[in-house]
Image (cartoon, rainbow, N blue to C red; front, side, top):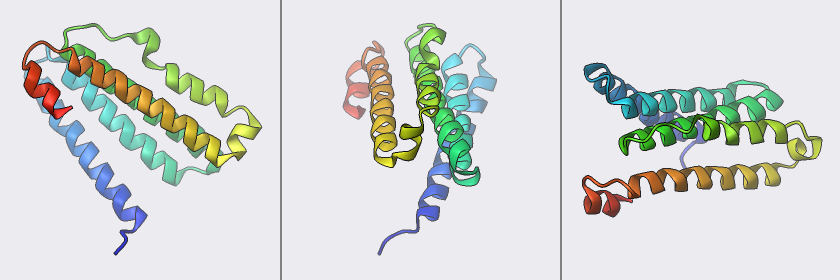
Length: 149
């Protein structure tokens, strides 16, 4: 039995928003835990981007909805860097978002769904890989964290 795409979207939004809401109180209890703030902001921005993808008209949904999703991955990457006590790379944070918005200015890119899916997939995989790298390089809990990855 196949699930309705709307049900899957709602389940994903519920999980991501709950994760973001779970990180916020941790940050409120200890403001020095910047990782929780970055991750909470990233989760909330991801939810906004996904909601934008299904509620906005075609072109703004493609450009802005996906741009917010890419920016959310950048915020979560910053949270992973904060877990390693590294400062966020603000110069690289929004690069995928900027690249996506520039690509959306090209008419052939906007009209070719296969190209959009391929490029967005590559950009998301690249962002996930840099997040995994940050977690992999963490010293505390070394092996137990690497097993999860």
